[in-house]
Length: 250
Image (spheres, rainbow, N blue to C red):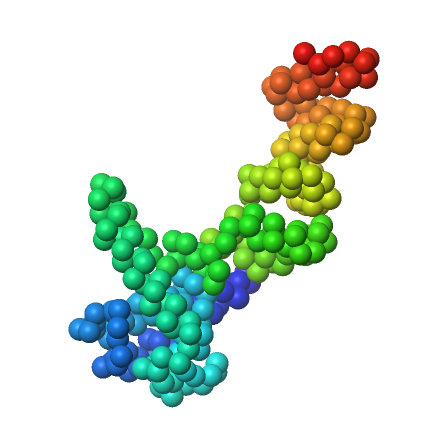
């Protein structure tokens, strides 16, 4: 079974950190947030946690080149801006855990890098990423970005590709009047699952809003075949009949 690139990256990091490069964690210099007396084992585990949690590489925060032996890195240097950002994030995480969660969480809940980042550098939810793609490149951008993210991250905890997230995005786009980007997500839902009750219902709603009553009726009747217990759809179909008969809606 093919493993995702992010998992291979994390696995490679753990291997190099636990074998030939184990000594890079001995006698660390220039620690400003992590405790001065941190052991090499603790520091190694912390660095591996950073990599797994954020999807970043050593060279993102530390002075060194990708592919270069870690023993040749200048770990004490503060030249990388992302290293300063990481320190700020560590302070924020400590404040959340020590000043807030310790007060409100009875079962000792704690957050870590992975809690928000989920293995990606920018901790954005799928709907937010797709909304940005829609704003930049319309429906084509949504499809391209969705397929790109799914190819790379499906099966991981980085993004939620379930129908709940898909439907929420389609609904938000439809309510914003962006019918083309709403439609492309509904198309994707039906491509992945032709029996998607949520997609059929939302497609019916989309057509109802744009005045295409024939299409709305067709989608809602398809949805009823999949879920006959959805009696409320009968009410929506009755609204179409009223409109076609030029009767006021109840």
